[in-house]
Amino acid sequence: MNKKCIGCGSILQTDNINKEGFVKSSVYDKSLYCERCFKIKHYGEYSVLDKKIDTDGIVRNINSDEYASIAFLIDPLNINLGLKKYINKFRGTKYILITKKDILPKSLKEKKIIDYIRSNIFDTDNVMCISSVKNYNIDAFLNKIRKDNVRRLYIVGFTNSGKSTFINHLLTSNLKKPMITTSSVPNTTASYITIKLDNKLTVVDTPGFIDKDAIYNFIDYSKVVKLYPKKEIKVKTYQIRKDYAIVINDILRIENIGDKTNSFSFYMNDKLRYEKVKSKNDKLKILPSLTFDINEETDILINGLGFIRITKVGSVKINVLDIKLVSKRKSMI
Ligand SMILES: Nc1nc2c(ncn2[C@@H]2O[C@H](COP(=O)(O)OP(=O)(O)OP(=O)(O)O)[C@@H](O)[C@H]2O)c(=O)[nH]1
Ligand SMILES: [Mg+2]
Image (cartoon, rainbow, N blue to C red; front, side):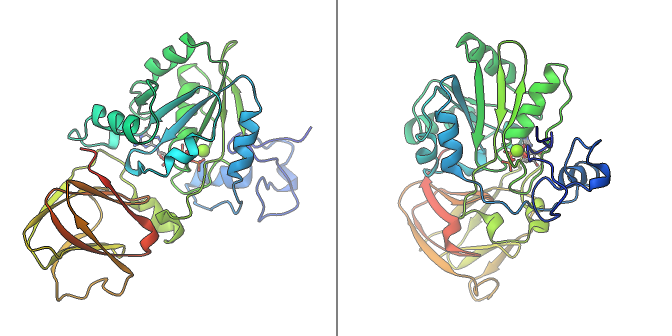
């Protein structure tokens, strides 16, 4: 039987260094991990797997398993209407887990998130906020699926939503070794990783879906790892007068082009560089732009980065690396 990397699920091979699962032939026999996983684990080196993830193939596989239940993991800074289509592809019982609760500011209440998901994305009682890092709500979730007699739980969702970290946490709580490779660049898990947690429950890690309109497609991977918040976000709120703008790193410029002062609150990494500039300052004006009329409390989402809450009626102009990154929703808060 082919030997698999226990970190990413790839079949180990010694032929092609640029393909998934590569290990040097001299170490093949004793290797548990492929070279990429070994480097991520030991040196934090970020190399990105060059593999197209076949979303429909994953869905087909899982849907053909009559014992399949699904935990669909969602990054709390990336809750967008596009998720609906993906969740609905799966047949089995579905649990929706909003991950990384620990990075959310206290002002973003769990109930608001759950209500938003239920009203706009997928209506079920099985929605929970969790944190694998802070061990929040994980036992409650496990109790629920055991009560529901779940036998095989597939952990699915977009890349970086925290699937492998979640399974590692389950392993640790079951006194097993947390062996799956995790990282903040996309495409970390390459194939299925099946883990029998105990006699009753098997969990399966899966490769994350890739969103072609997310920021990691428009920015160098060495920079991607610095964009995402690691700790609880301290929301930055600015009162922005007409003809003023906020510029964030070399990614985003948002300008108040309405008549009145407006309030912009940034639910994204507060360690990025935020700069207030006047309209005539040309910073990032070279980037593609779009404008939004704001008629009610609105969140402007920057896919993969977070969102900006705008509280007053008015208009804003956004310059951004690519306009496909931007969408809006009625404010979640
Ligand atoms: N703060 C915080 N970070 C988390 C949590 N769970 C995961 N992360 C981080 O999110 C990033 C992605 O985690 P992974 O577990 O590799 O995500 P994944 O969904 O398995 O990604 P793919 O394998 O690419 O599909 C890593 O940097 C993790 O450390 C959490 O509960 N809190
Ligand atoms: Mg993973």
